[in-house]
Length: 319
Image 1: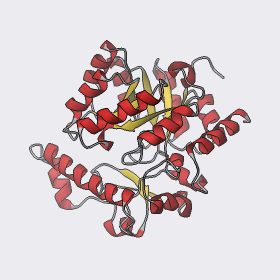
Image 2: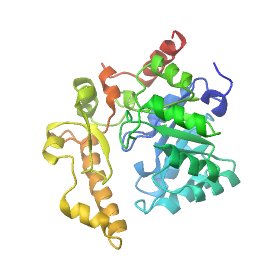
Image 3: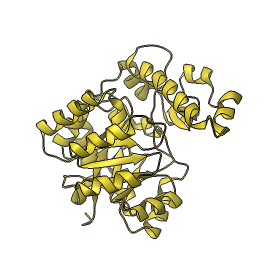
């Protein structure tokens, strides 16, 4: 194992972060991950109020001193950004993962309080920008990620970033087993952010229908749609999603292109899309908008998180 792998950076047993998943990640999942040798993060937007966010962080901190993080949307589509950042700084989470915006303020305030910042990137151009701003690591979101995926395949993206950047690269997308994990490390990543395979876990609080969808559907059933959040989102191609279509309407396109309306239109579309995802995640309805990546091809049953991690680690050691 390389000296600079993610386990060394964070002080954990294995070079894995359980990825922050919108409306999926919860405190039970985070605690199970930390208890079994990996790190984990959850989206700040999974909690409606500041009090709920604070309660979640404190619950995890009371359970263990193992390092965990919070994903923060840093652009104007997140009206709670300022208050969420203040809470993360005040409660001193171990790391913040930034997405969809300029992380300069986050990096400056986090570093002043001894907090690491990892930045989601999908290409070299943005990676170079966040490196100059002082990011501690890059999370390379590739084309096989669930949710908001990139457009570049894992090997090409990791190679490009490691050849041109001087900060660590964490791969995100397409990790189904230990062999995949070892592969991205051989390409130059220090570890991986892993999400989809943990959705079908006992600890995940989403509906049984959502979990079973990961077993029922396969890689060929994963598509991208702009109808949910306004930007391409990787979801399971259920009948409901098929009826929605995956292209924006003319009105949505006009609103996002109008400079005066763009900010508010994107916020409205995002909130509307989040409500659809929330309804699908927790409600047993046929109207399903379930985020997932191609890794669902390898999800065969609903399991405890400990079992998923043990299998991942055993396979990693044997490859």
